[in-house]
Amino acid sequence: MPRIAIDAMGGDFGPEPIVNGVLQALKQAEFHAILVGDEDKIRPLIPKKALKNISFEPASDVFDMAEQATEALKRKQSSIYIATELVRENKADALVSAGHSGATMSLATLRIGRLNGVSRPPIATLMPTTKRGKLTLVLDVGANVDCKAEHLFEFAIMGEAYAKEILHINKPRIGLLSNGEEDCKGNEAVKATFSMLKSTPNFIGNVEGNQIFDASVDVIVCDGFVGNILLKTSEGLASSIGKIIKRNIKESALATIAAVFLKRAFKRLKADIDYDEYGGAPLLGVKKCTIISHGKSSPKAIKNAIFQAIKFSNSNINAVIENSLEEYAKLNFQENQ
Image 1 (cartoon, rainbow, N blue to C red):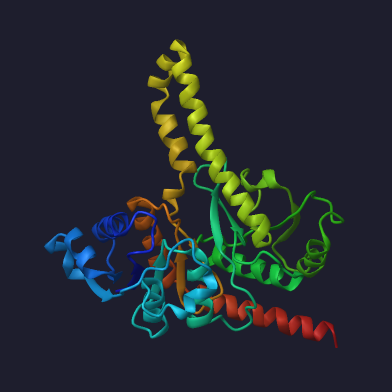
Image 2 (cartoon, rainbow, N blue to C red):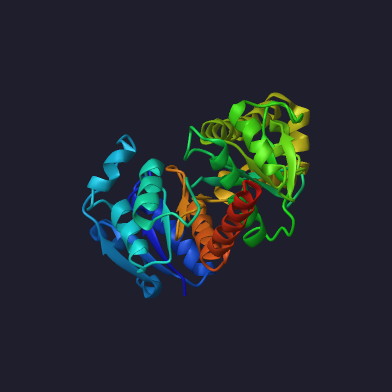
């Protein structure tokens, strides 16, 4: 049974939505939840019958969202530090946190450790597409704002492994996000990455921003600066689309009547673009599964983040990443002889 360490205190709204998400997940999946935080605040939120698969790990401190991520290593009594240590010490198989994303990333990288061959762990996220059931994996979306070509190359290999092992895509199409599809487009880092990736079998070349959503590519690689702007823009656009539709319906009697018949379609649209459907973003390239959720995560988002953690923990993805990076390192060494 997977053991999931959950930072119960780190979200914007305290432990209640996190605990509710855990309870929802336990109704649908078999796992053991280790809730890290103030037990006096957490335990009253849990029905006695649900305690069978829940344990508590005390933490007297909460790392605030406004604090600098570099301070996380010093805060050894914080819920995120203790949750990370549970994974490091093999007392848990995965970590889920809706707390400070920078602190979570730093602690996972420095305390749990990187996989062999990984220079910088990226945050990966799934984006909806126009094709039902089809998602695009984008990485990095915020962990590394300044990247060299070798970092972007590693992101591509890790994204390919995730697409194969978690999304079950046999031959994932890998694209490099640029300001044009032509081989010559992009900044110096993108151009150098293109040269490194062009010999990999699943690389389809440069892709543009619109291809993130048209299902023409499975994995899109970019640095964390571009990726984070892309992610936040997409989240804002998704929210705005819903508000624009509601406004137009209210302003038109005909649209109001039509909305009654289109209600099911609107529900599907909301599900397709709703962050809660995906729950969190995995930090790839660390030795144990780490899922970073939004600070404003609802119980549904936490539930789905836990499902991601279970699926990741039961997969062979880390071995695939290490083996793939080792193989490419050998090929690169042979070519330079």
